[in-house]
Length: 428
Image (cartoon, rainbow, N blue to C red; front, side, top):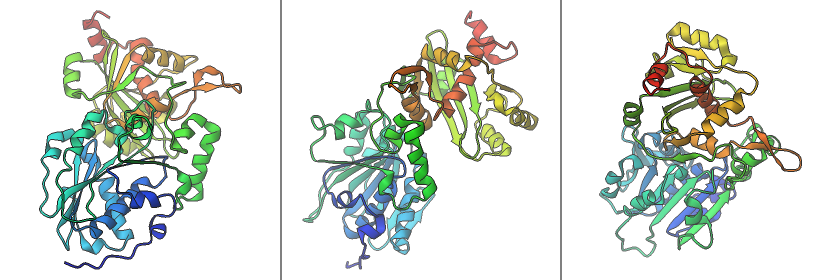
């Protein structure tokens, strides 16, 4: 079958910074980049164009959790088809989700690593499953999980242009992540690897305000600018918390086993998000298991209420930022009956940090904003570069909510809540 291919100018479609990436055919293609570096949009454009060019190709799109594909990779690929003016050639099945190139029947499939066994058994009707796109690869906890994905790429095709490829895109929050030695360190990287770093500077689509926000970081938080603006690895030096680990666990089982939960909220609107974080607190073994989060800007009182209702927290004890007393009262009036204001005062931030530092903190891999904050929340420095005993008050909205939620364990113990009863049963 002869299909007229669209004439695509790489520069016109994606701008600068990605020409080598666009044409690369090595087995591994890894892109770490700053925010706003158009790496996801770029990758989506590349795959839509390639699916139309190679009739043997099918694409598997992977994220750590399958339910996050619909609002990210699926939407990006649909956008890419529209940008290339070829959306009429594709069938978009949003409910699955799945995308079919109708002239040939080639598929773009979406899966999550929350069901690894289904990935290894994927088959296609036309051609072979030849490519994988792993978006937000940083969320994958171990190299072994990626190996499971690689095993799904098998077989060959009688075409001189045939190639198999694994593409990974991510933000580089910590230099301790396995992605660094596997793809970016010269001595340990996988053979047949193409690896690049991109930044917001190669994104012509950013408006002036977006660009200025990144530039402002160099002044307000230089260490975070290294990651968010330059796309470089986050370094462990100066981190407030080094006692944490990203780990898969069953939240329901942990709640049943330990029976002490904590919920906290921080409030924002235009520039800062409203956050909610939930954890299981094992006081006996000094462990905190963070299992759920919410992170969203521009939330009204009704939006916050509905979010808490969806999470089943309307009857749960929650500690919210006391700076927003009116909002707390509005939520209580709506039915969030056990929401109370945090205790603030001289030294409360430091005391809360010290309390958390006394625990081993486990973060569920679905809590991506929590993982980011723990990897970028650092102590401040003086003009000579000496570390101060004061954290930078930025990118800590989940951490603040966590601090509020844990006040009940070290600032006071209200006798009318479930936590107090649980503490009593433990003899604390």
